[in-house]
Length: 254
Ligand code: SAH
Image (cartoon, rainbow, N blue to C red; front, side):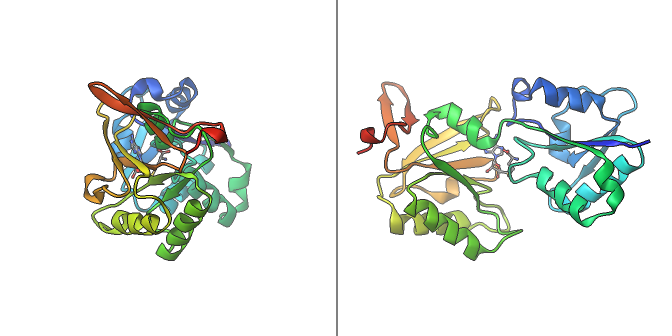
């Protein structure tokens, strides 16, 4: 019997933001694999379903384990927060397949998309991604800091709105501050910055500031940092957080 493996995106937090297709894939699985806190978000479990919690660092080992289970005939769901293809497990699964035994290529492999942090964060604050944007992970676990700084500079040259994932961690507390230093060399100090923590989860917190004033220590690993382009605007509101948007029409840019 040939098993299956679905890489499932749980979305940013609130249950309503998990797609019905993702929920169906979770309900159909005999085995769930993922980082413990993501598995904890899945409350309903069919009888007999097994959970394999792992730590968050060993993605490739987890992918191989999932493929071995699927090859033994199981229906496996590998879970990620947000979208599984954005800085998450789906790429690790395909990397393992490419380097693995030929029989893995015969498995029924699917990816169920989810609402990624960048989209959930954007929706919390307005429409910052209305024009061209890019996403950069600041984690240098799997790529060099030199690559990251080169991409930050290129994003500035392109005047993209920038979404920063993995802004910092205990192991690398200084990277967000260094990233802001690089951005300051290329962008106006008045550039809008919004740090959105726990977007789409019911516990959302946001800090709206500028590149000149931003404090990198206000971010943590549940924070998505959005950096405006030169066109990104702020609409002030009495007694409320401002809306942030990037117009699609270029002539509205300052
Ligand atoms: N696959 C995930 C991203 C994994 S990388 C997705 O598509 O969202 C982990 C990083 O995503 C975190 O460090 C943080 O920068 C961001 N992140 C994940 N969930 C978030 C949320 N609910 N709110 C804000 N940022 C989040």
